[in-house]
Length: 259
Ligand SMILES: Cc1cc2nc3c(=O)[nH]c(=O)nc-3n(C[C@H](O)[C@H](O)[C@H](O)COP(=O)(O)O)c2cc1C
Image (tube, rainbow, N blue to C red; front, side, top):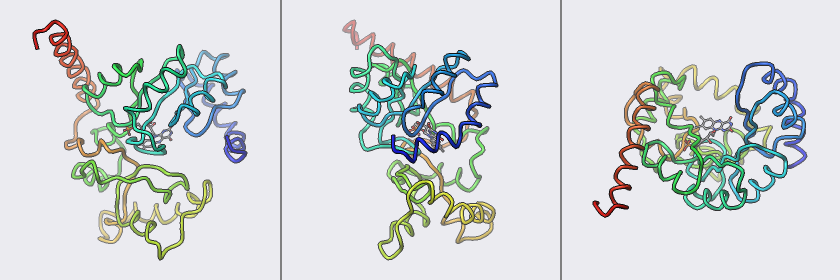
């Protein structure tokens, strides 16, 4: 953890301590190992503490810090993400931190991907993008429409929103930040401060201004290519479960020589 991130946790300590006064079951650290006081408070309140890892080294540091669960999150994921694919990362992390449980993340949006994650040694999955096109999602309506039309190649990792590489939908916004003629994004935490007002303005006007419509985007993973219709969270969960059961049945049939 860099000094900057450690300071970040101290700045947010009040908010994190407030969370522990609510009946939460899990708290996860996205950028760096959780500090000792977060682990201690998790134990004291019966709250599991997880942390996201994009490399085996991250995972080892999280376990040394005392986390209960490691989330091994691959390159495909929406949001801040590293450079190793879920397929490669998950078994490496599972082996490195056993017996600490691992959840697979990044690129999981259907029951076959869920079943594959279990085959890689994960005890469960951790998903993000999948929920962004549900009826219940608070995704900006213009962004939701873009997600429904997007293909899996329509995302990229960009430092343009937070200052750290995060996967998001390509748009005129990411093109402008990638243009060598323009300045580079600032490091975290300055970039979010720099772009906050512009992002708010774009979101307010995206439904009526063609310029803002082209600029608007949001964090999303490569699975955006398979998010092609709006459905309820209930039906997404039901399809994950059904496809998991069907896949296991298919694999069992193969194992028994019937496939
Ligand atoms: C819109 C969005 C916002 C996210 N914000 C956070 C966050 O604040 N903290 C965090 O730990 N992970 C965040 N993530 C990453 C998710 O926790 C999760 O690891 C990731 O979405 C899994 O990959 P998937 O998008 O392919 O499902 C975010 C992901 C998305 C898509």
